[in-house]
Amino acid sequence: MFCAGLWTYANHDRPELIDNPPVSEVAENACATMRATVAAKAAPPDAPVDARVRSIREQNAAVTVMVVQVRDLDRDLRADDRPTDAWLADWETLVEARERYAADLAAGRRPHFVVPTADGGPLTDRMNSVGLRCEVPPQLIDLR
Image (cartoon, rainbow, N blue to C red; front, top):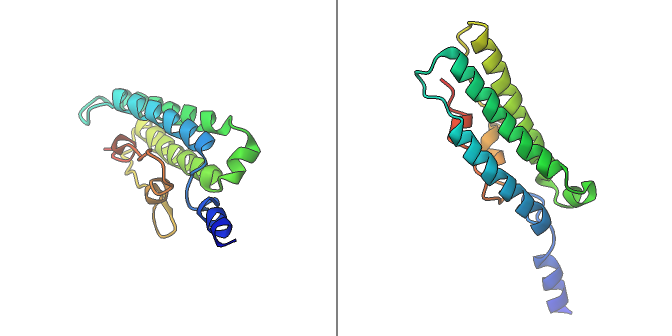
């Protein structure tokens, strides 16, 4: 009886982690592609404004593709791995903040990018703590 209880406990969903293999594998594969695209689309800090805006938007598109790939999983499968939908929403929040920055930059303003916050800290801390091999690429938060 004790072993059965231990087995059940050891294999329950940890609500703070994306740990269901069908979800985590799709997320990590999509993330690897996104990270490679984000790195490839990075503009140097001294690039002209239009090139920087284009770079930000192309990187945002790569993140959006990743989000869509994970959202294409069965809704119940995602719901069973609790932080998945919140993690995806965090990526969308980051993209929205980056798009506001790009729009301000394109309009000739001198925007200052601030990583959105959650739970009293940078949103990226929560995004990086769901148990996936999917760190937020530095190019997504280091906008100058």
